[in-house]
Length: 83
Image (cartoon, rainbow, N blue to C red):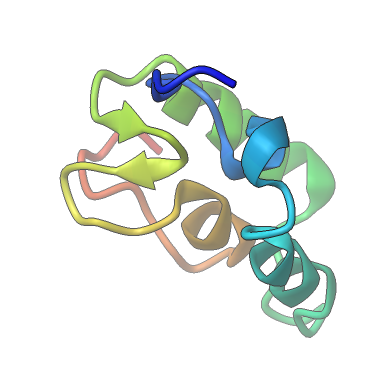
């Protein structure tokens, strides 16, 4: 196992830490449909986050959130105004 941190990965892509982040995925899966981002919008937001220099191992260095959580709620927005 490497000590390197993946700078441009989302929590769902961090295989060696998958169990640690399962609660994030469970939370997203169980969001009320009235507030949850449609899948297309969610994936579009995450693709923008993956290109951002502020992403570090699934977290936004601008605000400290897990980007997958922020992107999962329709009313949320990027603190860097990218989406």
